View (cartoon, rainbow, N blue to C red):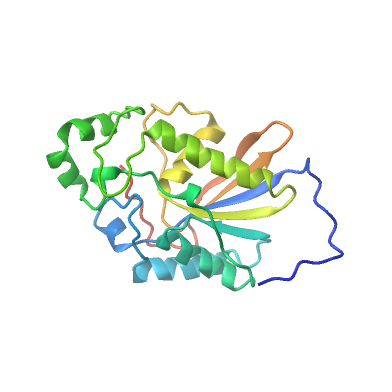
Length: 230
């Protein structure tokens, strides 16, 4: 754990915050297109390799704090990044993936078979559609978007003038992209969200706006990258 520098100059509260939004490394369920949601699935060996490559790619990058979803796949990825810096991974439940209720743990083909009406609404991007309840609570996309973007903006505002690494999930990164680009929630997702990708944003406290600076950096992972979101 790093020791605070008593001589450090306090951050200017009006200074922008640089954000590295990172999706967790691959899991076995990613590889077989099984929906995870809030189920706590660890990285598979490929995901562990991706996390190590991610940490190496960012070795020269200034990172003042690492905050992760509390789910294992994100925490493991964040730990690889934080360990070399002597940082402690902070956990924030609000960075979790969307809660998919009864969809969780199923292959996409199984979801379509068991919940045809809900699956159709999901694929049609009905952002207020109610999913079937399951072991975990289901969220509408609109509610999930509010939770995820609220967490990102809250964390950014708390670290003015710093560089913050947020390790989360594909859905959370999608929400950040839509917020920064001003995309309606109902529009199809026509951009990739790769495992262990680096996505750079800047938060401007004077306006409260999130700026997209770079998306989908995966050069450190080639030739294997994976995007399993529908």
